[in-house]
Image (tube, rainbow, N blue to C red):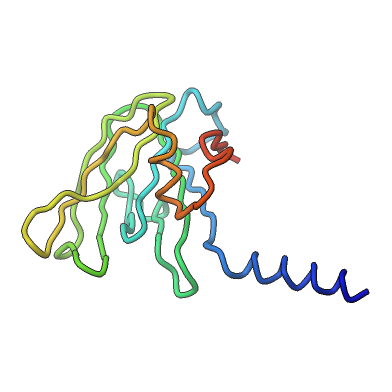
Length: 152
């Protein structure tokens, strides 16, 4: 009985200690197969305030109880992301707009590049051929199976 209780308590702690997984579908209508979509993951510290002017597609990567691992599905084509960045050493002044020409079947991360010593500006990085780079943004320590990200 003690062993069962210890196992249950360990599982509860593991579930509560990790980040939250979010999936944001940024297009109307029925779900589409992954090969027809692009996947976007903001790094921890980047909040997406809207996609194509729609705040209903917003996603936060830092929550009061830890980080949020976010995957955003977008249709192929040009999209506008309104983002804000907050990290220990860098920040964005207000919200910034960046655009992505999304390709079907590709994976992108939203990260930053130096704009000045203390400020970053957001950029997209295509990491389709770098599954570990994509997975690392989720804060994962073990990438096993992470490159097989699914949309549901």
